[in-house]
Image 1 (cartoon, one colour):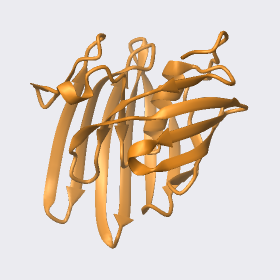
Image 2 (cartoon, rainbow, N blue to C red; image 1 turned 90 degrees about the vertical axis):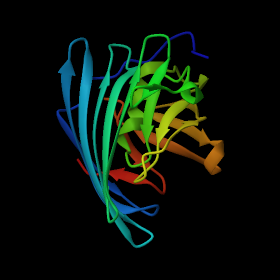
Image 3 (cartoon, helix red, strand yellow; image 1 turned 90 degrees about the horizontal axis):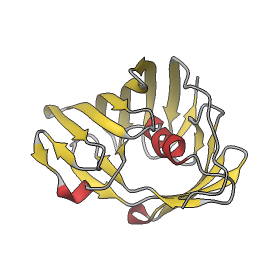
Amino acid sequence: MRGAASVTFADPPATAAWRHVDASDGFEVVFCERAGDGWRVRGHVAAVEDGVPWAVDYEIVVDAAWSTRLARVTAHAEGGTAATRLAADADGAWTVDGAPAPAVAGCRDVDLEASAFTNAFPIHRLALAPGAVAEAPAAYVRAPGLAVERLEQRYESLGGGRFRYASPAFGYEAVLAYDDAGLIVDYPGIAVRAL
């Protein structure tokens, strides 16, 4: 549910980067550019998790409301390379590699397990005023296997760029800090902004 007054964010910077910590040891770099009235984000993540190295490349297009329209994700691991393509329409109907994906119907965001950046999508889209809380289920893409599943998430705006985030499936709850462009600065146990 949205509060009475919503928050606006500055445009994202052309580049941003995060150091992944604790859950995995790695680095993420993103490049943002206008795509029509929305945005195109190209990102690259290289990490080691539980002694296993992997890398993920992605391109995500969001519309003017920051709802995901297209995501192309490629993962590289010791066993080879895998790729998947997700697309969503204005009604929240998704396809994964061209096939209908009813398990993620109604989701407005893609959330990549490999990425800290993708937590910017619901923050921008919801524009929650301080004190407001919203459910934000996402089409969640696992890394490095690229399985797609529904991930229930909840955001509560605490004001000052801080949001209480909960992901019940992982038993994870934390206060996330964002900058004035709506990009995560501190994702406890996951990532910290490097640029």
